[in-house]
Amino acid sequence: MNTYRLYPILVLALLAGASVWLERVTRIDDPVGSQTEQTGPDFIAEHTRVVGFAADGSQRYELFADRMTHFPQGDITRLEQPRLRMDNQGRETRITAAQAEVSPGGEQVDMRGEVKVRRPGAADDPALALDSETLTVWPDSYRALTDSPVVLTRGNTRADALGMRADNLFGTLELLGQVRVNMPRRQGSAS
Image 1: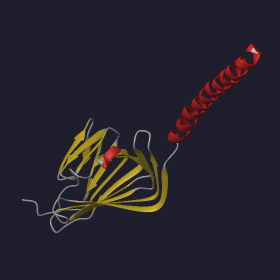
Image 2: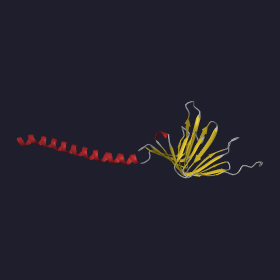
Image 3: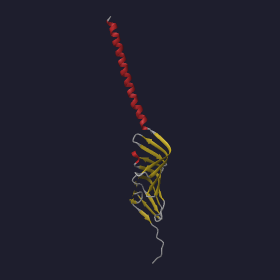
């Protein structure tokens, strides 16, 4: 008679043990699965256009890319064939590169691979061209910086340097390290 009384207790103990085992097995598998998902991109877009606006609603810049890949881990966006078009006080500047990485929040764009900056000339200001392998751009504050060698051409003047810093989108430009400038003679009457 005592044996029948122990039978329900043994069955409950066996069920409780199986429940604990099942909970531990499922808990171990979940973290591994979610870590694998977080390392890859959460979206990829082809032929994208991102537009930045000023506080007054006017357009400040456009960023085009053949391919945009966003990684949630670190909130990094990678661009292939980026093209940045910026407008500052009616002067347009275009920057192209092979690749770029956009920081979280989009405040900084690190461009690399055949970086080219072009600004057409105006009435009394010659065209500007800058070539480098890297360039960091802050589109909202119109700043740029590189520690890579640069070749700057403005009209007929050419300058080579080991780096460059620009404020107000090439309004104030500082060439850094071993600067060499080639300025042609002005044509005019000799006195």
